[in-house]
Every structure is written in structure tokens, then in C-alpha cells.
Figure 1: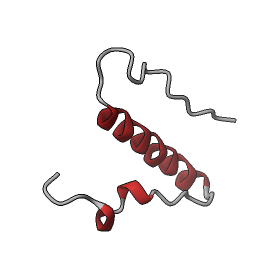
Figure 2: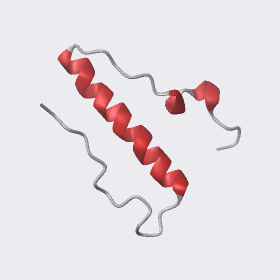
Figure 3: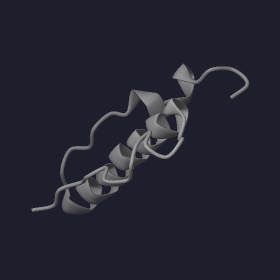
Figure 4: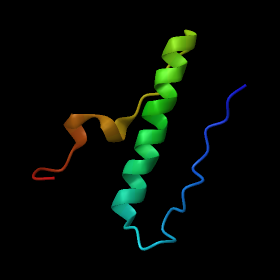
Amino acid sequence: RLIVSADCGFGREGLSRRIGFYKCVSLVLGTNIVRRELGLEEAYVRAADPRFAFAGE
């Protein structure tokens, strides 16, 4: 059993919400790597889909 945790201080040390958002996205993408290796279904990450990216960012 593996538990993925965000024990990294979201917002406590002057980090912007944008950085916190991308940290969350990275956690899900990393979890998907493990799921893929175990042959499990991966979670769709809409935030990582380039079709939904803001222009110029």
C-alpha cells in the first residue's frame, strides 16, 4: 500500500497559489506513473492537458 502525501508546506512559506497548484498536478502525475507500473487505471489530469492551458503561460 502506498500513500501519496503533500507534506510540503503549501502556502506556508510565501509560495503562490500557482506554485501550489502545479505541485498538486505533479503529485497526480507522479501517482499515475506508479499506477501505470502496477497496471492500474490512471487518473485523468485535466490541469495537465495543454488544451486547457492559458495562452502565454
